[in-house]
Length: 508
Image 1: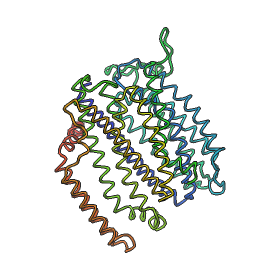
Image 2: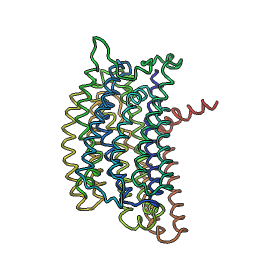
Image 3: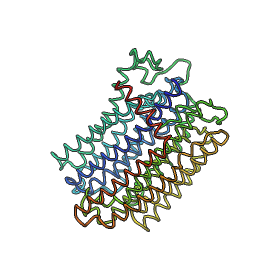
Image 4: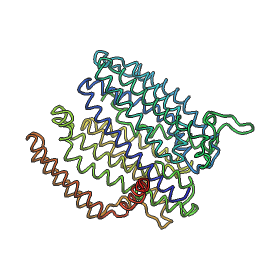
């Protein structure tokens, strides 16, 4: 695959992943708004915090380390051994589902059955759905490693749409089912996701297209565990790297989902993987690959930074209005607006950390990963302490502030690593974190104007005042976008060349 093709496909994969995450957040937001009118807040809270935490913990601990290890380096490898290693995620997922399921059922406080019915069934279903999703792990890694962007988009979109349709249907027809509704929807989500990947590879393997691309897996049977005579069952280099990442997974999960653990237990793109070789200094890499990686990193950093800044600036002035439209005065009159404002800032930290940490994880050698585990251990302890004290000081807002602090420290570590990595080269991808001074000025002016507009027009002065507030925000947003087009020319050119030109060619 040509370097320019890798650049384009990698950028599209990372961009589509980011877009899907934003889309799924919007869908979840709308789904919660709908279900709040039929079901209790307590039931939805159990689903969004406790059961979702169970599911994400099982999936993360079972597969995260395997994904990061098996996506490292070149696609030219012994895929039989890699697939064998990936199948170990299933028994590991069974272990975590059973172990954590028992914790959720017997060590945590069981919700009142009259308010949250069928809690036990919900725990079992969410644990089972995690195991079902792990069955598609070999197909997912193959698709990710070979940049099957369209497959990822279609599979995840279909699974989310199916889940939403079933949830809405059952909520309308059988609201008394309680957690049965979300249990069935979660199982459907995992099943559809896996079936999309399996169906694609059943049709793709052995086809002329696969032969033309010299795809490393020729038969569907090769997607299952296979023993090879006189050879080890797995690649031990990958296995050792997986173990290093596995030790880190515990710490990373605490840092990622820390506030949910505190609430539950205390009652209060892998673009670097496709290009550069792990563990090699920048001077020992192919310089074309270094240039490509630096270019993609810089542009993605700039892209997520601008998206995050836009959400932060406009989220501050429109949080109260959004919650007022979403749930009425019940949400907009309390601490809800402040929570959403803080979360808008947290989105900025999340976006930047996602790109920087992905890049550093893709380049670290085993020894660096092991050293980083100690850093994560210290961070996890500090984070949990800060979460506890900030919660007592400022309630739910303290959770978000603690997460912002956590992400800031992780971003600082990744930036330090990236700076050291590229300092012996002529490339400076971290300039992607420096937007145009004029654009920064426009952001500041927009923030001041929309903030003043909120004080004057929102949100208890009638619909006409709200419409004026929306109009002011629309004008400021338009001015911000126009400024982006005028100042961030390199990013705009990249978007046009890699995305728009591709679809224009298809149209002709």
